Length: 239
Image 1 (cartoon, one colour):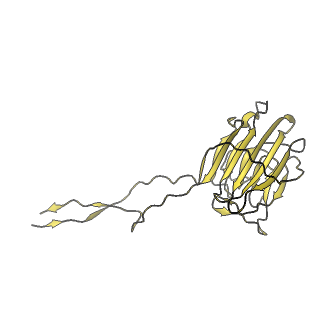
Image 2 (cartoon, one colour; image 1 turned 180 degrees about the vertical axis):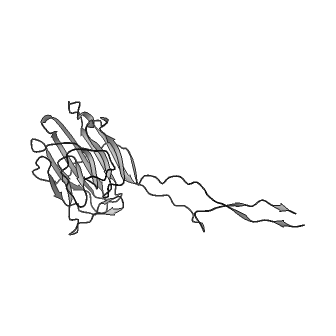
């Protein structure tokens, strides 16, 4: 007679789907006011290039202040655009969407018109390496509806690479835009293939609320020789 002991390979192990590249969730509301800000004259469906004082990241892509990607574009229509392409698109859509615009961080993507009122400004809080870059749309109305103003801001965090959306005033008095009823809120990769959406035409963005999109950090796991295989003790056989 004899015996055999050892390890048997269990194959075809089902693994869970990878998490979203960003964790998105409601967060504590805190309105930010940089002491020094820049501003510009915006028209309807217009953009202005702004320089972030550190290198922001969007879906594992860095956007440094180089010749090729010298500026982030602030759109009159409630979002920031990273990389090439126009940021003047007014008709919001759900994300991801391969159609332009791509590479956007949208706090309130809707047809806004700062030409008829309100302002868009930007500035920096703190010092390296924990600076926060703040872009604020203040009392900006929707097109043709001067009374439907909204006030919100996008915060880019240097250390965490997170995006925070702060909402001071979302009550517009119009069913088509009130509390984001006609807006898209979220972020999208530069190729338009990935997105983390908080709201799309849902009308659920309240006054004095905030949302945070934080890059997902995969927890550390102990490596094994072959990650595709799981080993289990074999059955003892006596002959």
